[in-house]
Figure: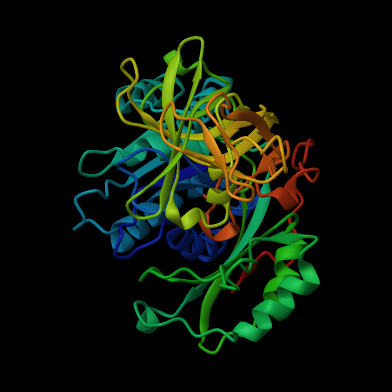
Length: 442
């Protein structure tokens, strides 16, 4: 029989990791006689929901197994979730879903909705009942939503891979020990097939997280073989407990699918909005840069936050009249002029003329003139000519900005954001089901 196992919401900001539970289950399920028909699927969900713990990633394990072993597999999964979930965290609400057989289309549509919107637990439970799945939820049971979405998230189009290596439990919470020089060498040698290993602006190593979770490092790339080869180049200075290759929607823009008018925007939803800059940028406390854009249906602030680094310089160069396409997540209630679009990327479609008023040149000597006061005309600094009839002149300032697509540096990108290096690499074929020989250890 074909069995799909969905897991979600087991971690917390101070520990735990749903991918680690999945990695530990790989070995156990194989020992029970299960055969994996796909890499463990890591599905990143809508990054804008306020109740997420960290990366908002759900897992699906897809296996073939003898019907008589379904019970032992379910028991093993539930025990692992109960053993490793961060139940003491108020915002951690684990969910497990089991579904056998072919995935029906309503579950794939549900998965798309969870990635690009907000859905209710009631909707998830209705689908579980209707399609003969079974679900186990803990606390407020919200994890069932992500677990069901992971089952429906077949990633039949564009997808990427990530090799995640895990630390031994005695090292959790301690500083991670990696040879950073080996990471830089790996990045140089594999950057055509991997991405976001090192931040080019700061030189910061990006493959190692900073929290107390079990992950030592993760390498993302275009193929399972590519991330495996890259991982073999990284020198860990501490022991690795296990590693697993996941197939994922990371780096695919899976959440950015729908273009919307401003009046249609909803809180916590990803959005793509096209319109015109109506107010130039301003920098607020903390280094965040805000500008206002509009369309025929309304106005909204767009924000480039301080961690986005040089991306803010692009935003600062926008002037009223520029036509842009903004990509990001909606925060705040949309009522009339309310709400903010937190920018993930920005496409400049057309540049307006940047016109400024400047003092006139002296008609006698060509020198620069200065105002003698409001309504009193201008005086030449060079020849001292005075003329009460002269007025300021309108000149066009040459724009340094050019049309194009702009994305924050890797250190500020979300898991789902497609980096520039992936444009042109998108996969359009269904995953074959053949697994790379070395896809997990042990």
